[in-house]
Image (tube, rainbow over all chains, first blue to last red; front, side, top):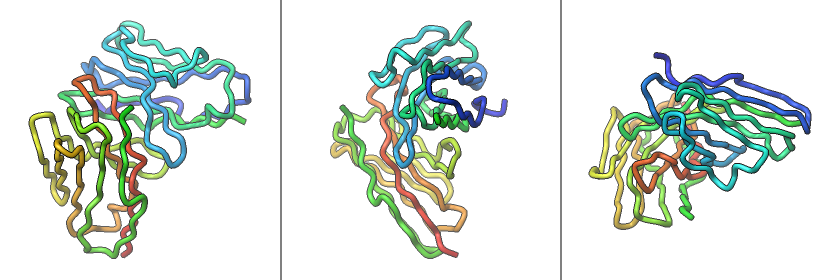
Length: 111
Length: 112
């Protein structure tokens, strides 16, 4: 297993368009997390799943954001009607025995 | 809300020097603490994890400690190398579910 995989690595979109990111976790890691990181800041928690159940959502996750994890495997994060303020790195993570493992992230640029 | 402060924000040292990075939490009730490294435009690489029952962890030239009474952690890097140049982030959680609170990082530059 090569670790947490995220696709695409980069996404440029026009304001108002919808975008979807995918995260493939390390197999057998039941918990999956999404974070957002803006330039010069640390990552901020968005939401997390235990298997297919979404157990917690941050107040940062506005109504335009939705995340799914069908069958407790890969996860998708969709942003509808993108705004320039959504430009950030979106990071996916899993954990095993308390240690968090992050993917390489998807860099979103909204123009 | 948990706030995490990392000092210094940036650090530049000559190769071979030992250095200490600092991290503090407003809520000292940290469950686990983890130090990460982030290279520009990349994801986070886990360096050290201090679990709830531990106070210190070591890996190679890296040593991290956690003082739960004060909510402070330090990352010690011995004999720094140019390859250590990166941003170092500390993060903690308040319970077993690993939604982490991150600091803004320390950007380290090791000059050959």
